[in-house]
Image (cartoon, rainbow, N blue to C red; front, side):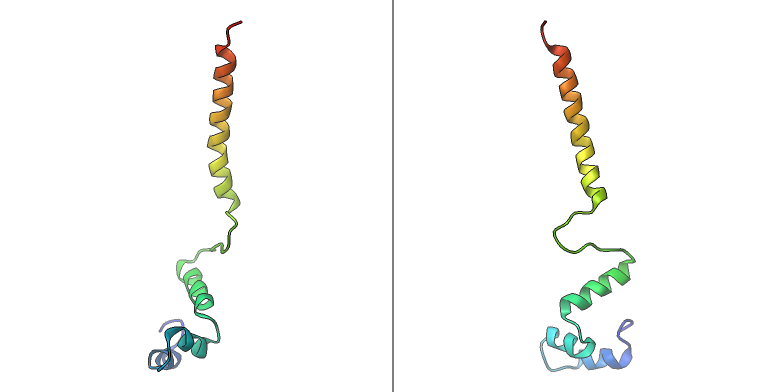
Length: 82
């Protein structure tokens, strides 16, 4: 009701059609589009949609793996019998 306004919310709420059709008739957007925009504005966050991972998430996953690999290689090099 806050994002649509009283009149448009009433139009949506009293519609005698399925929810996705009522949202489209009221907002001109698909239910997915409207929900995504609402979630982004309500959370105040930038949501990434789609298969790509955010760069910081990739870095935070790869950094510990690379550190562990480096530590394993260092330990293996020191352990060799020579």
